[in-house]
Image 1 (cartoon, rainbow, N blue to C red):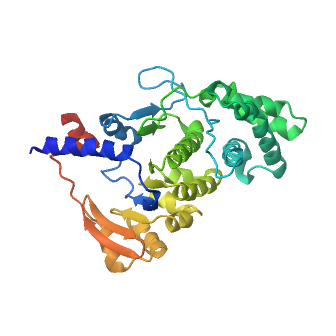
Image 2 (spheres, one colour):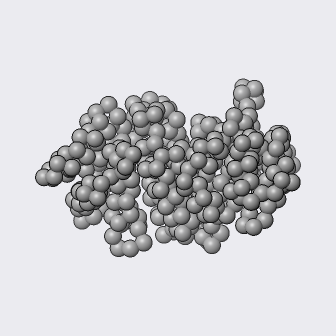
Image 3 (cartoon, rainbow, N blue to C red):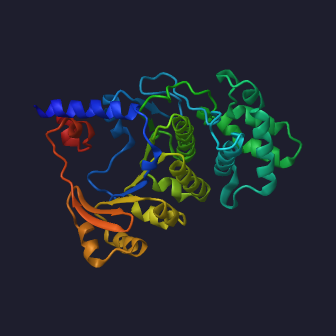
Length: 356
């Protein structure tokens, strides 16, 4: 049997397997650490060939709201499904997400004040009233509905929050003030946010996390496992406003049958986060490749790595490193075969991409 035949069979089996119901006792969470500037560094766009090969959906989010083909491409941060929470009130968790979103937009260094949180929570309950009474797509609120509800409040704090939101509603950064018009229910979905730019990227990462959470809740009801791969993971832990929410939702994914995997090349930024210990404690599996000298010492202390074990991530070759699984640490060599279709689809090396 030829290599391509084997690979096609494997890809077909992968599609079939993910369509089957999977027990969520097998839940795992992973953290993948790469050396900064490593040659095997992935970009979000590099996942596109694999996702398309597996007949998935690639969603490109940009400030202009245009997808790869130039057509409108929008994700609504206010999207909500009725299984969003464990209890009978899905707004209890959705309100937490919207508070985190507003904190990122409005809060600054000190975050939202208690009065501001109360006002936002009140308005969240107002804007979802119609949808909860009649849950059809056209009743799903937009960010603009939250903005209008804030404007209708008497408190001066409400006007301050609304003014801060204005640029994302009627201003030049209003890409998240539209109803979702792309297929977020495909078996595989890739969110490409690299073009969002500095002002929108953090918001975009938060919105994508919430979209994935929506999917986790839907899959849980069907007893399906959801695998979530998050590249540039350190960006979510870099800001205090997004870090605490990201850790909370990381734990929530695990509880609800999700398998989150955080991937980073910027280990230094990841380790500087106050939340990194929570991530490591809630990661069953850590996959570590070659590390820079400064990062190795911090990781050794954080993960209790012996000098001998550390040698396996010191000037190591491609596909060589350490695996952490529970209390077990194992060195590994994983030289992925290059004469396979999967390698050709996944490689990020320019010379190999050009010849593929």
